[in-house]
Amino acid sequence: MIGNSLSRKLFITFNYIFLALLALLCIVPIINVLAVSFSSSAAASAGLVKLWPVDFTLRSYQYILTKPDFFQALVISLERVALGTPLNLFLGLIIAYPLSQKKEKFRYRTVYVWFFVITMLFGGGLIPEYIVVKNTGIMDTLWALILPHAVDVFNVVLILNFFRTIPAELEESAFIDGASHWTTLWRIYVPLSLAVIATITIFSVVSHWNAWFDGLIYMNNPEHYPVSTYLQNMLASINLSSVDFTQAQDLTEVSDRTAKSAQIFVAAFPILLLYPFLQRHFVKGMLLGSVKG
Picture (cartoon, helix red, strand yellow):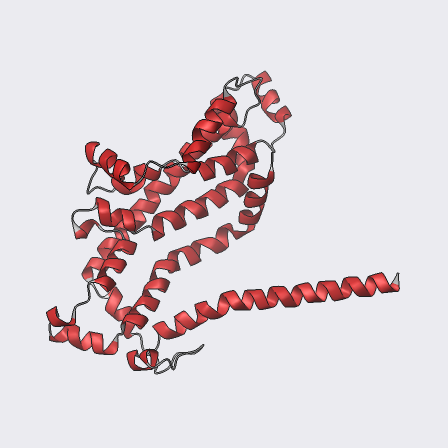
C-alpha cells in the first residue's frame, strides 16, 4: 500500500512538472512577441529582446492605431463578428436538432448526415466559391465575408452530438404538453446546451476575426477590408521608396518585426477579452460534443 501511494505521488508530481513545462513552452513565445512589440526597432533588429522590452516604446502601436483606415477596418470586423457569429449559431442549431433525432423519428437522418459530412472531406475549391459569390451579387459587401461559411459542418457535428446527451424524456414530456419541435428546440435543448454554444461562439468569433484571405479576394475596395486583411496588406505593402518624410521617420522607429508583433496583439486582443467569459463552458462543450456516439 505504501509503495502504491508513493508511486501515485511521484506520478502526480511528474504530471504537474510536465504540464508546467508544457504551459511554459506555450507562454514564453507569447511573452517574447509582446516584448518585441514594445521594444525599439534597433533592439528588435539586433535580436536583443528576450522576455522583457528593450528601449521601451509604444511606437509600433502608434504606427498601427493612428492610421485612419485602421478604425474603419476594425468596425468592419466587428460588424462581421456581430452578424456572422449569430448566423453560425442559428444555422448550426436548426440543422443539428433534426440530425440528432433517432432513426425512428427521422427516417432519412443518416442520408442527411452524410450529405453534410462529405463536405468536410471534399471541397469545391476557391474558384467555384468565387464564381458563386460573384454571381450572387454580394462581391465587395459584408455578406461576401459571412455567407460562404455560414454553415460550419464541424460545429454542426459538435452540436448534434451534444444534443444526443440530453435525455429523451425531456423532449417526450414537451410533446405530451403540446410543444412543437421549434418550441422544444428553443425552450429545452438550447438552455441545456450553453456549454456547446459557448464553444461554437469562440470558434466562430475567432474564425471571423482572424480571417484575412477572403477579404483580399472578395473586396475590390481596400476601404472594405476587415482588420486582419488591412493589417496583412499594410505590412506587405511597405515600400521605402514611395513614402513621404513623415512615414520614413516612422519606419526608422518601427521595424517590420515590431510592427508584426504589435499586429498580433491588436488582432488577438478582442479574443483575449472574450475567452475568459466562455472558458468554463469551453472544455465541457468540446468533450461532450465530440466523444458522444
